[in-house]
Image (cartoon, helix red, strand yellow):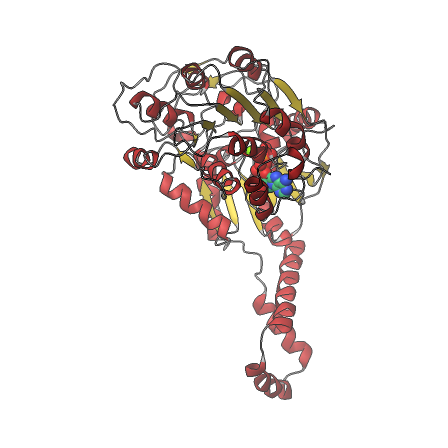
Length: 511
Ligand SMILES: Nc1ncnc2c1ncn2[C@@H]1O[C@H](COP(=O)(O)OP(=O)(O)OP(=O)(O)O)[C@@H](O)[C@H]1O
Ligand SMILES: [Mg+2]
């Protein structure tokens, strides 16, 4: 067991980690923190939910100079929500130091950001596009930057941020330290590593499987038309504390969240076409438990750390194994257990096998639950509620009433009636969802045309050029939608919020 004292960290940092409830360092932290503290470049790969954020957050906070108000560290993340989350975690680690991290992302008022920058945060956590905006406006000074972190680097490449990242890395001082982290490392990362990193140490936590063992993985063969009823039954049976349901497209997410609401579930959707205020409010409600179901595109697949997510449902099978790994990794984090259930239509079975092969783990086949199982699940919930209330609540005010009732009706009938009232019986309100075409192995997709029909592409604009991807060795369908590969270069001083930033752009993902 390695404690945080063993790294020789400042007392203020160890104390903060203690406050956060971190007692032992995780495997990736044990392996990367000493190297990072020496100022060396490194590539860190470890499974989802195993503490990669602190693996770079701790060295950042430890090494940066609190006496100076210059920006000394930057962290780039693929999505806005992740930027906010990472900045929060770094600020927790820095709670007893005079160091602060500021999240900066597209869709947020730039003048507000400029104001916040004037408070001189030492660390900026940003999505690449917005960081570029500030770089060009010279509202962020780069000359004191000592550490650059690329979190979810592979995803930033998938999303077409490669040119932005290259440009950022070219502009920051050569003497910096570069750290790169993700749960998955496709080959394209090597190019970045070779070009922009200084003899990086490759640290990959040895694990037979890419996924953590504490996520139970199941799949169900379900016809497209039956998916929704099956999903509702599963929600009734499992009564998840919090569940994330991944759908393939934005349209899918909209339709699904609406349909779930119609059937009485507390659900909302999140995807890249929603404005930032909406994205923020949906995520906040989910974290607070105001809604228990988050319906999402892959925009929520990466890095998000929400405690209480007990279930992940792949309503539509993910496009590739990386997406699968990250999606199901939203549960089973920090040693907790979780259940991931993937729906597969009969024609997609081969695709599921490919994912299994890539992750080196079989999903357990489960049969589709029946309506009566769903009812039983809800009855069990009602029973639990009743039992809990009888043990916890002060019932004095009800006892006289109960005694009076029991004079007329027998106790079994009464309790049965109470249970019936408490049971949310399976709802069969008719629902129509637009069908999604199955994913077929070996099929090349037509290039993305940027129409909104499939849920829209980049910020709804859809005018950006399609370029084939260049041999990354990844199975993403042979092409990639690249939003800003040079064609959009605002003059310095020009203000243009990129509404679609961080919203996902692989044409075949269309989040
Ligand atoms: N040493 C530790 N002890 C206890 N909890 C920890 C420790 N390190 C990190 N955590 C917690 O574990 C959770 C997952 O960490 P984190 O989000 O950094 O995972 P990750 O490896 O980046 O996952 P992903 O690949 O999904 O981004 C967080 O809630 C974090 O606060
Ligand atoms: Mg992470």
